[in-house]
Length: 341
Image 1 (cartoon, helix red, strand yellow):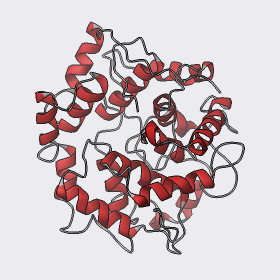
Image 2 (cartoon, one colour):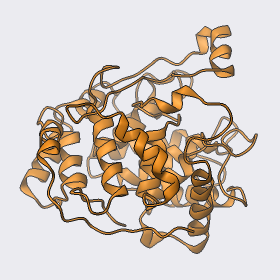
Image 3 (cartoon, helix red, strand yellow):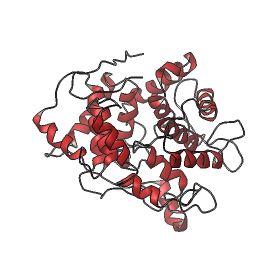
Image 4 (cartoon, one colour):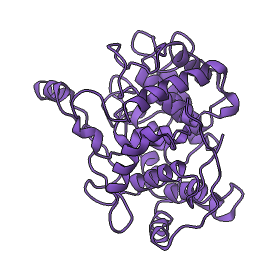
């Protein structure tokens, strides 16, 4: 398996990047300000600006707006479950909030996390339970990743879910979301390990990650069947969909940014950068083609309701932050700081 460099860079940002950093650091979106300070600039949690930005996350901006729409003691717009309607109900809102710098130290987040975990309890003691109580791969992995970010890495339900992901991995690497073969769309398990502290990894976890990463590397993050155009558009929220930025995010976080088979995806990312240094939000899900799109055309009532924080076709703070984080992790000599585990 390729070596994984975890060097902390020491260079300063260029003048071109400073303008983009200033944009990400604007106070109107404290979530991005907090994550930029800590993940791109390497500031510590006890830094005064970091503490102030974190304090403001629930007071203004995207996270505050989402939280203001939740029901007391419950979630958002839940229909027959916390899963529907897509993408407005609890499951989807919690996935977004997990990207916005919140943690269980906030009593509201802790209460929502328990509500969410209870709603998707699985018979095996883990998470991602379907109507039958059996865990569903995409739901379980997404939920585990989000809960780790919220501060639940040591929760027994999260740990059982992680163990289940290892147990159900394909012996040759990779996972299958719907049980019909390994595919690049089944990316969520690797994203769990991208945020799970390395100090907690077992040998079986390392093996599953190495084999899963090799599956993606063999395909250079995009080679599987005929070209699928949505994979070459950048989206947020991600939900359970895959695109090249999604793949780059978890693969560089896992330490594979220096592998030669990442070159195409990294060059593609650089090619999409605007002259002002930002990246656009290309599309909002459901951005689909082929048989799935045809199915929704025949069943319009089942089509998900799009949810977005930013405008399609315009510079995106979420996409730009992720892109800069990816490029920093892929080049340990760059100005950014990538957090080790």
